[in-house]
Amino acid sequence: MLSIARYCTLGSSIGRMGHLSFISSFTKSRMFSLASIALGIFCLSFSAAAYAKSDPWVGCRGADSDARIVGCTEIIARGRKESKRNRVAAYINRGGAYQAKGDFDRAIADYDKAIAAQPKSAAVYLDRGEAYHAKNDLDRAIADYDRALELDKSLAAAYGNRAKAYRAKGDLDKALADFNEAVRLEPGSAIARLNRGASYQVKGARCPGHC
Image (cartoon, rainbow, N blue to C red; front, side, top):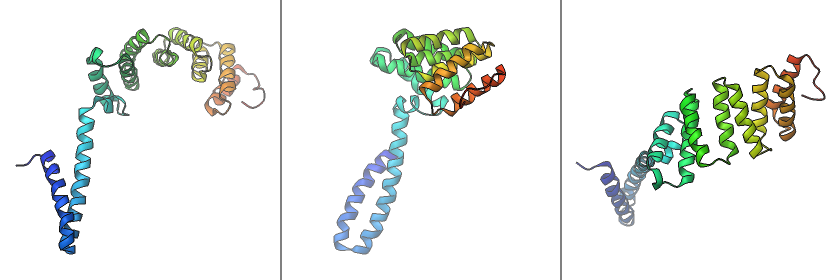
């Protein structure tokens, strides 16, 4: 019995034979060509699935959280066989998958490792801050947002997230100052404007201009 891979290899040879038969018989060639096309589509699908299974980066970069954890874990296990940049990316992606599943402690542990390897990355501090924020550890979240903004003052998401943390702590003045900065950096952001307007409403103050 032929394996699928061997069958596909044989099928490609049959397809070439089918094109040769076109010269001698149009009808037979047409039937052969249709069969070859169907076989080709099947083999392409099989090859893509086999490739996805064999390459952990497909899972590590994918949208499915469980597949991302499996793929990234395999990459991390390779150690120095992978570049430092790849290992950091795997930790960040796996951390994001754990965070999506609500496993914030594991997410933070992965972000810790990414930060240890790449301490100048504002994006990783932002990610870890969001994980702390989700745990309602607001002080650590704010500390990470602070560090992210020290590294990149144009990071509107860090201002927006820090503003929400300040608002949760009841510090509306600091929250509004950060929301104002987020709106200044991204004036087209409806979310930033909505959050700012809600904060003015909570404070009982009138929103200046257009929130």
